[in-house]
Amino acid sequence: MSKVKFTTHHGMVDILPDEVKKWQFLERLIHGEAEKFNFEEIRTPIMEQTELIIRGLGQLTDIVSKEIFSFSRGDDNYVLRPELTAPVVRAYVENHLDQRGGSQKLYYIGPMFRAERPQKGRQRQFHQFGVEVIGSSDAVADAEVIAFMVNIYDKIGITNTTLKLNSIGDPESRKAYVEALKNHLKPNFDKLSDISQKRFENNPLRILDSKEEEDQPFIESAPVITDYLNDESVAHYIKVKQYLKDLGISYEEDPYLVRGMDYYTQTAFELISPDLGAQDALAGGGRYDLLVEEIGGQPTPAVGFAAGMERLLIACEELGIPLGDEKTVDAYIVTLGEEARSWGLSKLPELRKAGVSATMDYMGRSMKAQMKDANRENALYTIIVGGNELQEGKFTLRNMKESDEGSYTFKEILEKLVSS
Ligand code: AMP
Image 1: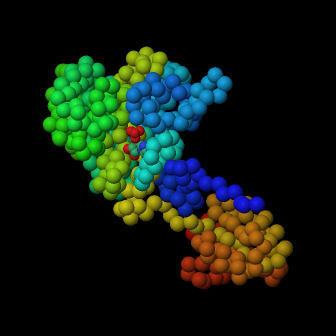
Image 2: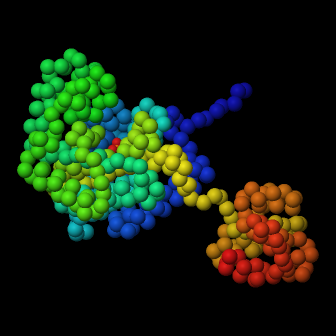
C-alpha cells in the first residue's frame, strides 16, 4: 500500500519553531508599543457571517468577488475573515463598546484568509496586525494611527520606507471625482485593459490602482482627486498633514492612491518598502467614517490600518535585521543512572520556580550523548549528576561557554544560576 502524504493547502504555511521565535519577538514588540500608545487588544472569531464581509468591504471589491473562503452549514453562512476592520466594527456595535466612553483605541494581531494567487509576500493564510480607532473624527486620530504604524517599523530598524498619503474625500467629493475620472477615461475605453474595462462602471477608482501597462498613460494623465475635494474634506486633509508634521513624520502625497475596500473615506495611506519587490506594501489604511453605520451601528467616524506580518518578516530578512535570540536553555541536567534521573527530574520544578529555564534528557541517552544534546540545545550550564555526586550531595556545574566547572551543593547551584 502506498503511503499517504499530507501537505498544507496552497498558499498556507507552517510556522516552525525557529521561525516562531521571530514572530514572538515581533509580537512582543507590537504589544509593547501598543501599550505605550494606550491601545487595547481585541480578539474576534476567525469566522464571520459572509454578509458582514460583503456589506463591509463592498460586493465589487476584489476580496469579496474573488478571494473569500466561504461555506454554509445549515442556514448559516461562514466566511474565513479576509481582514479585521469589518469584524472589529461588528464587535464594537454588537458589544456596545461606545458605552465604554470616549473613542475606542483597539489593536489586533492574527491570521486572515484570502484566496489569492500565492507568491512571495502573498499567501492565502497570512497574518496582520493593525489598529482601529473608532469614535473620533479628529485628524489627531488619523495622525496617531499613522504614527503607531510608522513607529513599529522604525523600532524594528526598517527605516527605508515611504509613507504615501492621499485624501479620497467624502462621498460627495468622490462622486464629483468619479464623474471626472470616467469622462477622462471614456474616450479611450477600448484601449483600457480588460480588468479596467470591467471596473469602469462599478469601481472606476480602482482603475487608478491598475498595474497593467496599457492603462498607465491614461492613469498618468487622469484628473487628481485632491482637485475635487469639498471644503470639509480639504480642511480635514490639511489637518492630517499638519499633525503628521507635528509628530515628525514625513510623507509623500500620492493623489492616485486608492485602497481596496469600499469603506474608506477621507484619509488613505500606505507604507511602502523598496526591499519587498513586487508586493511592496508593508501596511495600509485610512478613515472609514461610514462603515459603522453601514453594518448597523450609529453613525460613528473611525480610522485604522492593517499591516502584513509576513511582509514585515521578509523586510527584516532582506535587511539582515536579527529578530530575537537564538534558541537557548539556562540549565540542562545531565544524569548517569536511574537514581540520578529521578533526582534530576525532582530538581526541574525547583529550577523553573526560581525562574531558571531547565530541561534534561527525554531519551535515556548516554552521558556523552546528553552532553552533545546540551550543546545542541545551546544550554548555558549543565548540571552533571552520577552516583558519587548523589552520595556527596555535591554536583558538577559546568559553564558550557567558558568550559569551566566546579562542584557545588544544589542550593549553591540554584543561587549561581539565579544570579547569572
Ligand atoms: P489590506 O488589508 O489589503 O489593506 O492589506 C494590508 C496589508 O496586509 C498589506 O499591505 C500587506 O502587507 C498585507 N497583506 C494583504 N494581503 C496579503 C496576502 N495575501 N499575503 C500576505 N500579506 C498580505
